[in-house]
Image (cartoon, rainbow, N blue to C red; front, side, top):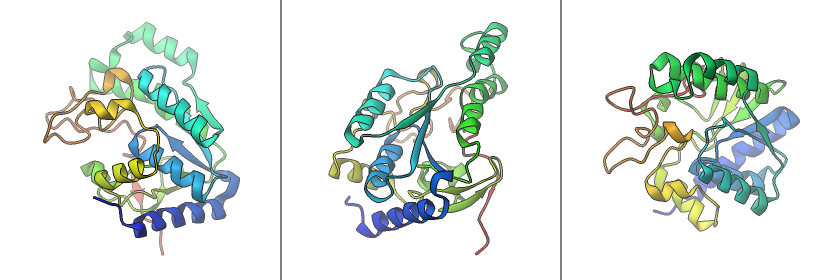
Length: 235
């Protein structure tokens, strides 16, 4: 499948709109998955002033660091990396162990909060809007998401320029534009987060089933970054 140029144009226009409206008070939160590297390429071509931030949870796969550096070099990016608070990680590990996330949903959410949610809050502090690489097709929990939303959880405007893209279109864009991507995708990892919380999937499985697969029968869960209550802005 070849992605329709109109979809690329619409995504580029939304990036330009976000950049023109919010300027320095706008960030792209990047996890270096397939969608996010496609977004980096779009930003570099259409809205290069947008600040790119990422979260290093301390448990990422080496392949994620590799693609991070590959993108940094290819696009001459200034990527701002946010880490979890060391004292909070130390306290959590002392109390619950290094692999607490396997013990219960509550423990896993605690780990996500310390390693992801709180650092993202710091990355978004002082901002008025943020950009994500989420697509509607990725999960049932993302079906009602819109291209522009009011993010009640973080109190910001949220832009999702790839919301209408399919997985096939995303990969067509990556390959057509020679975009660096995470090598784990070639090992059947459609969704990549922390190393112990991500696995490859088999044919027919939900693309999100490789994340926190031990929690639910359907294998689909969210860490909390994109599962908060959202509402579409009034026109």
